[in-house]
Image (cartoon, rainbow, N blue to C red; front, side):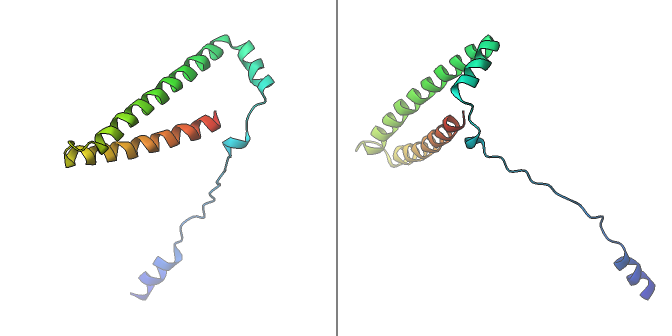
Length: 108
């Protein structure tokens, strides 16, 4: 019996090295002239970037519209308790979505 317990303590897991790389995307902005140089070289990228910015504008407009509608539902005296709870929850979710978009806008 003693030999078995000695054998189990002799086995060790191999040593592992874990490397963690931290990047800060907010500090890695390209100067305007470098971004423009990239756009000159890749016209499709310029068009895609323009389309994406238009898409972001549409999403922001939609978020404002939905938020206003939900605020009215939440404050309306004739809204049921379920409707008010639903509106509150949706407003919370839209608020979080807006925050994510703002962070994304800072990075991009």
